[in-house]
Amino acid sequence: MTRRTILNAGLPKRLNFGALELDAFAVSGLASYVLAPSLDACFDLGHCGVEASRLRHVFLSHTHQDHAGAVARHLSLRAMNGARPSRLYCPVESAPALVDLLHAWERLEGREPSDLSAVVHGLSAGDEVTLGRRFTVRCFEAVHRLASLAYTVVEHRRALRPEYRGMPGAEVHAAAMRGELVSDTVDHNLLTYVGDSTIETLRRHPEVGRSEVLFVEATHMLTTDRAASARWGHTHLDELVELWRAAPETLASRHVVLKHFSMKYTADEIARAHAALPAGLRERVTMLVGG
Ligand SMILES: [Zn+2]
Ligand SMILES: [Zn+2]
Image 1 (spheres, rainbow, N blue to C red):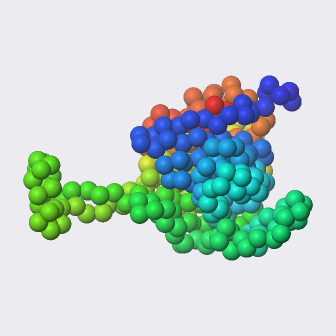
Image 2 (tube, rainbow, N blue to C red; image 1 turned 120 degrees about the vertical axis):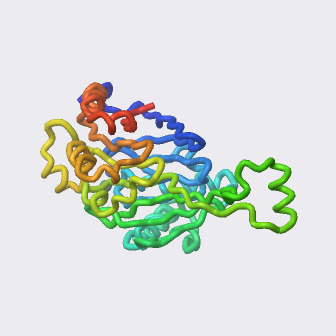
Image 3 (cartoon, helix red, strand yellow; image 1 turned 135 degrees about the vertical axis):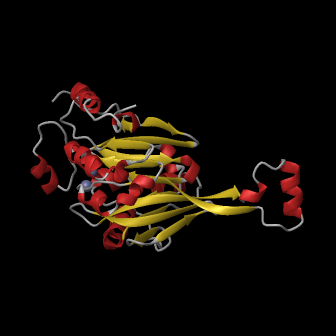
């Protein structure tokens, strides 16, 4: 394999989904990360550039190196820049070893051990993390070879109550000043991020299709053996198409980002696989290749 054929432009791809702007990169076995500056968060951290270090909250789907290998860099870069300490979230089963790893790096650099209890946070399915007043991140279990979590970001939006809709702004304001309750909070599933996973995760969680943006893996495609793909804890593109036919609500998101393609596929092959997706799905799918 030559360098040219490896799908690693080395640069993330900028994705604009309405108000949500993301920088994303995911190549199987190399690195995965999705940066969401408006959330002050990123999802997975297989590589940590300066942009990633500016985001405080790091949600790790699991601790394979291509998803979690850059956490020590994140802590160091933030410390160097005087930023508040990182908050690393990972499956609770992986938290002790992650703490050990960070302590090992402190020893390698001749530093005193620090208290990491406020840095590493083990999470379980059903747990929630609030990001300011506007966002909550909910965890659910993903099926992979290691303990894995997927994350849904819920945005708490203010919406005018029906009786105030269409009313001039000044009147709504006056009503609010009189103490009337003019708006309600409406929860909106903004983004779901599923890291490495077999198709089973989506079968168990059809509600992911209610998220505006859905990241799911399609590590394998074309002639790669589906059973082998599943044994490695991954999803074959054909399985996603079958799932969409059988349970379209699961992939009903306005934007579906397919990612984490194996390095063995060329950009042309990935483009052809996209073109072969059925109408109704294809238009909503972005294939995540180098930016
Ligand atoms: Zn991976
Ligand atoms: Zn993995």
